[in-house]
Length: 520
Image (tube, rainbow, N blue to C red):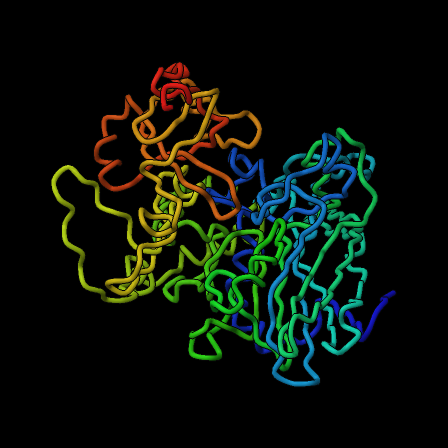
């Protein structure tokens, strides 16, 4: 049931809009990011902790230990997502179309046929034809669509129920050895779309997606709660007679309106190509994703197919997959059909396709002069080390900026009031900044395995970075890393939150010259 003006819904069988097709590959990469990671086997430790982005659980379960803190990143579990963006109206009959996309978890249980003809659950089963079947969690892609006319009633908005039915599918296995039972729990949610008129040709659009289903018991394990969750939730926003304004690089006249937009657990970026030549940046479609992306994100044209890790390098993952043993490949194929498809693609990849993965020149820009002796070269303009990239020991890809432009906002001189090399943050009464000595104390919850390996080791702070979501991270180099100087030269660091660091220097007592009386 819908309330408000001009509401409509559609399920996965709707014909995709041409604008949405422009961002289809990127949206699919978001949908399956982390679905199944190399080495694509059930036994792999990393594939026992899955689905880390855009997961919407029932509110009572999420807030069992207190309210969650909203951020623009959807890497924290939540019960809702909120997108706000600006749209220019180009026609009196303009409409906005929102497409919600997500995964529904599907439990794949292998059952063996017993001597009396009954069935019992087993973790794996080999049939007479030699094939292996493993119990594992799969996921089914789902979509829903909402349309809103941007007329005088649009500020009332429209709320539409969304979700997916539960169900059970049974697949007999050859030779009556057993069967595969796939079970899905019902999902219930809602999407609310409203438009606030800011000017005759400008609206602030809000899209709010919420989980409205029944919550499991408060202490239910996350793996169990995922059965009733919206997974990898994101939205595509388009329409007729509208163009969207960049929230990353807005026109000067709209800075205040952009700053007033609130995005929680997701962030919208321009998709497709700029409809006005890119100045000011606008587009006919937005992708609001739980992963922070740049405007106009693209999948590299050299990539022959999805590897379920868009932050990785295709060539590296392909090489690693080629090196899997026959037994490892058999397990991967039995783990999930999408893993089997990756193996088939890698095993049959022509040499010329693999050669394309080695590298590509996107643009040519004048080289920068070498840094003077004793100084470290700056990171390429436009590059900001992401936490995920830093923790995995990799540097994110970057885009070159025209020569002579102001430094990127996070670099020295790029943003008034921010200076990573000299900024400090107070931890246990000690101001930590460049040159400070610390001991690493990663938190047990929210820290990845590589963080925990570094627990207790000492390091030196290189810089203090302020993230786009308002959080702070400190770049550090390890004292006992023989390549620390090389990493510093390259600008490759480990990144930790202030609460994950223990100062090795005691809080300084105020010197007489620091007191107001002495100053007087």
